Length: 249
Image: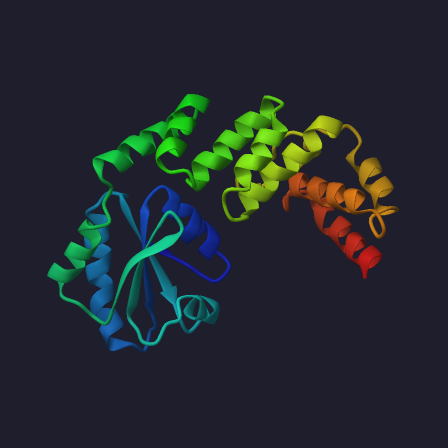
């Protein structure tokens, strides 16, 4: 079980839902039925040994997620798989109903096979996943990373265009766009980044691009791509983002 906030929702629910079903329990401390349902949800999801994950959202402290799920009453429970809501219920339910709800989220044999292919992580395995699920987010990102490393940046960009933008897709797309001219490497997973991302003189490059970003679309894109590759973990990223804003606005 994990407590989720507006800030951690992308990682704890959306990204997590790519490898396991996530049950999102929207509750509040003052809600009596929530206190009844919560322990049942925890016990039943624990029995799945990680195949179904419970994410609890305090609606009083996270109004953004209440708006996102268009909550009309609590407790409200949503099941998310592969970034999509696949089922839901509202109100406290008996254990038998909760167990049926959770059991319906456990992976099928086919889903377990796809998970094994994803864990293998080689190009053939990832391509096999996409033959079955053409918009499988993690497989697309992983395969695009392989293509960038192999010098096939155009293929990587075309592949990434098949799915909605996320921090991971921005990171890999930035690496694809800059690899040919700058020799950039893909940064850490989830855009964690940090360091010079394989560029010998990144500050000089950013400073030179900064002079051109206002009137040169290509320079602006290259500048933003370099910041994506540096990632939020690099202490220079924030200062260069501020410098870019000052130039543009």
